[in-house]
Image (cartoon, rainbow, N blue to C red; front, side, top):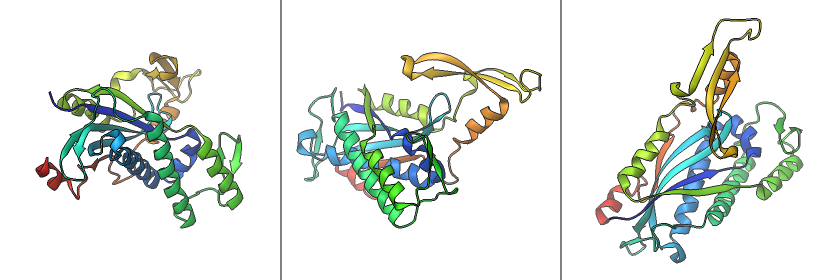
Length: 264
């Protein structure tokens, strides 16, 4: 019946969102690389299978309500190549990696690279100060003391990695991931009504759309926004020009994919 496939979702703390918005290409890419690297590193541990898995990954900057929510969706194979170039699979088809451990390794890798970028002046702060939600005030992250306080808070904040559905057929996994690949911030089917003509009540027009409230068990809710605010939310989630939002890692990494598949 073949190996299992797992749906992984990796998210970073909301306190990073101001920095994401100022460095979209750099931090979106960092998010994808380090989340996949955490999965690969743990999968190679003999406790978790001792193999390098195949990973297909896609990045999403927003949630259902079109608010900033950077996260990665991944399809992860429950099997792969060992260091001896033999094929092995996870010992349990319904369980692969401990979520908390993946989140911890992901955090360590991401933060290590983020600090290197800061030390090399590779991070942009387009305005002198960024508003940091947990402080409730703007912070000048060019100030080394403020930066160290910010980094310390991020280490103590909540990093999440969920392993969701288990896929028992690879076709199902690919179809599932495909729903996340070329989807825009919102589909037409979720737009309930539009009022584009200015009225006394809504001088900038009005758009009502449906979204899933995951804080309320995934219940569908409706939200109304001025046309201007709706468009601004939508445009914030257009990918940076040339950014590759679908990437492969592990044994599907471009540099080794051909040899890996031949060995399998």
